[in-house]
Image (tube, rainbow, N blue to C red; front, side):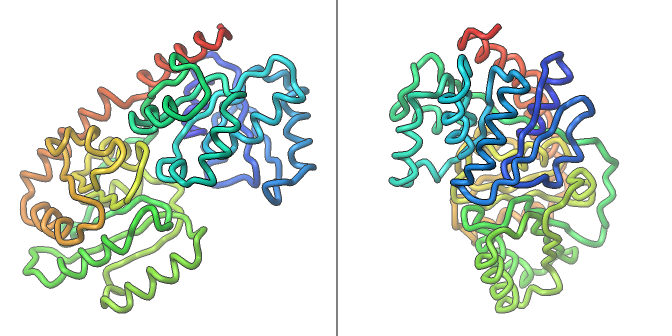
Amino acid sequence: MCVNIANVLHENGYEVQVCASRKGGTLEKFILPGIKYHILKKRNSVDIFAFYRFVRIVKNERIDIIHAHSSSIFWAVMAKLFVRNLKVIWHDHLGLKVKDRKAKFFYIFSSRCIDAIISVNNELAEWARKYMHVPYDKIFMINNFPSLNSLKKRSNPEVFTIVCLANLRPQKDHPTLLRAIAQLKERNLPKRLKVILAGSYDDQEYVGKLRALISDLGLEEIIEMPGLVEVTASLLASADCGVLTSVSEGLPVALLEYGLAGLPVVVTDVGQCAEVVGYGKNGMLIKPGDSSGLTNSLLQLVNNNELCAKLSKGLECQVIKNYGAENFLRRYRTVLSFISLI
């Protein structure tokens, strides 16, 4: 989302710079020309030298606003001690993390130095209004928005390809998907199954458990784990269905990208997912951890091309209308006006 926002603001005449705390990632190549990009090479959470580099960038570039995503808010708040008249916007994608008692204390403590909060769904906005020391009228709910190049569908008619576009970590609950696929492969299906778990491998312990479960369930020939995929448009163009089995979410960009790619979806009823799929009208909803419900939902999609077409078209229209970049930009301008910067 950081890159998406930077690109949209740049295209609409704002002077924008992007700062990565640790290292340049794959998204670096998607930053538009004309946007300055900084890498702090942060080694740990208390890297004084990296923080000094950060403050120096803010001063030298005469930055007025820091738009901090998730836990980067702590350095943004600290920077206010060294830079006069600096404003800080916190973009809250954290979902389950803010409910952790220890983490919650640090966010609440830092909130007195936050000028505005953007929450990606209503639940997080209400949490901020209840706990954070930020004026009620400076807490905004603004949906995430996707950025996806349009590509022609090229799925294999003999294979039903399921994509789960989610970093490999416990919050995303891939085991529920694996158990559902194990149940699904025992059914009399008109097509072969292929499942792609596309996401970063940061949590090696979790990935190891997934690999063991794949082996135990006999899914080695069905499951692919390509790691982080740079060009998601190409991946989604080859798919027949998008799945998210998260136990907690804000507003997952992956779900919005499924919609732009014209995929029918099955998602858990967490965060803003139900709203995005029209509470079941434009996508299938299941309870978190419900592998049997996921199996039955996927079975309907495998066996019913008309249902797939109906759901995918409905979701595509919903995403374009309510979750586009223009909607974000319009509301973001309101945020800036409320912190008296334009």
